[in-house]
Image (cartoon, rainbow, N blue to C red; front, side, top):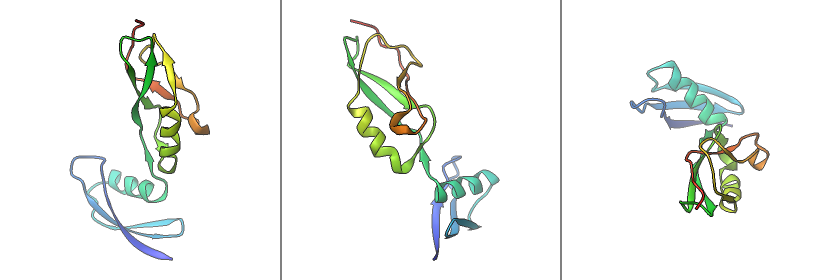
Length: 122
């Protein structure tokens, strides 16, 4: 089965509309890119999309009720909602330091959820 797909590149502010042809596990870039980074982005997005996750986790006994967190690496797009459900259930106790690992190896992805803010204890 072969089909064409248009992907908007987000590597830079230009936002190239890249047209590609997808067949099984092969990608052929047809047109629309202005640089090599766009080609690589379109191939990755079509075959194996990943996303950085930024969200927050509930805090007990802290000077803030939430701590902002992010994934240490991009998460496979198909696992985003599984990961979010796990993060939603998590509570941490203050104090929390910037860079602390809040959840290690979330959903067996090899990716950690890391604090992006310091929260002091109440």
